[in-house]
Length: 318
Ligand code: RIB
Image (tube, rainbow, N blue to C red; front, side, top):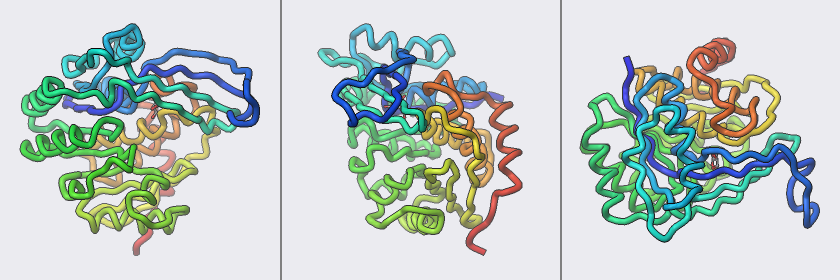
């Protein structure tokens, strides 16, 4: 039975290449495998929701330019509902310039453009979409849009008692007073360290960080580890979800696969530990391909990968 995922946040036109070594070593680097893709955190999550067979509502901003067609084309084709995407007059659609070296550890330069250009009409459209969502809907959002829009959307979701899943990128934008209104947060180790003001470098420190988010009022906190695993703190305890050992071709969009599938699992009524398992599986599969949306796997593959990871899922607070 399909449910509704609302995805609010960045919508980008991605320009991606492969490079032999990371940028910085030379003034001009020769690149290969150039592609233009639909991207951005909210766009990537919205695309995943359609792969899982849900109604997917995208909320965000694009420019009135041809880059908007690049950013939205794949989503339109996939059936993502785009009525909540508004045009920012005088602004370009956001652009991500992405280089992927042999290690798969991508580097991104983001021109945030329309993602940061909100007006009253665009905010009203978001409020209306949240007000009209079915009672079982989930709101997944990121912080690559202004803090005031994030706050408005979280408060609107709270009034409807809709669960809120937050990808806290950019972490410096987060308003600390919002923690008790958020159901789940999915930072990587650097974001967790920034948000908490404490070092987060390995599994034990990630477990402490996840528990610290719970102390701030967030019921489910998943700290994503650099190896692809994660630490989850939830009402049932603290869990380590292992990395799957897939060779990384391209890490672009793996974090969005994690947050998107975590939100989808909650939408489907799964407990937090199952959501973290599915999310980790989706992120593993995402790094095996090239680009974000073209690399995403659907339900069957994600659940099969989750079964492979399940035997190593561990409580670490016993
Ligand atoms: O998180 C990955 C996404 O954000 C990419 O699609 C790219 O747009 C980046 O900025």
